[in-house]
Amino acid sequence: MQRPSMKATVFLGGGRITGALCAGLRLARDRRRVVVYDRHPEKVRAMRRESRVQIARNLKSAIESAEMVIVAVRPGSVKQTLGEVAACGAKLPRLWVSLAAGIPLENLRKWLSSARWVRVMPSPVCRIGKGLNPVCVDARVSAREKRLVRELFGKVGPTFEIPESQMDAITATHSSTHGYHALAALAKGAREAGLDDETALTAAAHALGDGILYWRESGLSLGELLEEAATPGGIAAATMAAMDKAGYGRAVAKGLAAGIGQARRNAKG
Image (cartoon, rainbow, N blue to C red; front, side, top):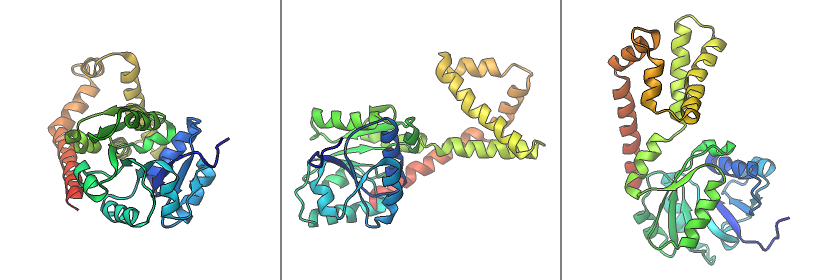
């Protein structure tokens, strides 16, 4: 049973990533006290039913209950949100975590200078405990504070520290949208080749999901699996060669470059 006086993990923003993280923590049977503040409390009601979070009545009460504050608003709203935090009159905790893509530690320190900042880029797949959580840490963050962050996000998937210079690239790369996009494109191609909708989607999902699961569990390198799957003169080899010739690799590289570019535009506000 949670004690009302227990310090909380507080989320500012009740959007999708907060919902996914709270659901993942619930799935992991994590017993910490979680408080969510959003300007629109109705957004958080479904989350309260699903994940048993508490809804803060106002920003000041949310902040004053916190051991750690997780800023989970859109990148364009971070500066305004932190301005509201500074003006709300609450005693501020030291440990703050930003989930805002592209917003660097330099900006976060400028907008809320008393805080010790950590950036994390969680994947929405954390909802089922399969997230991936790259972390970068401000120099002022203590070993204990770093451990608190890694313990929290480690409940919902692998969590590891990288230099901030790599955050934009990993944000663009580890998004689960790559899998959904590839699944949609492969299933569409299969339908155009003559499969019915259900069979096309089943076959495409097997190719992507089960193929990658085999890579994870087999211990074989990606090169070994490509060689195993693409027998010279076979269907798989012909398929991959045609996709490469059509610019598959170039399209992926351009997509990542566009994502990194957007992250850098976020940093400029």
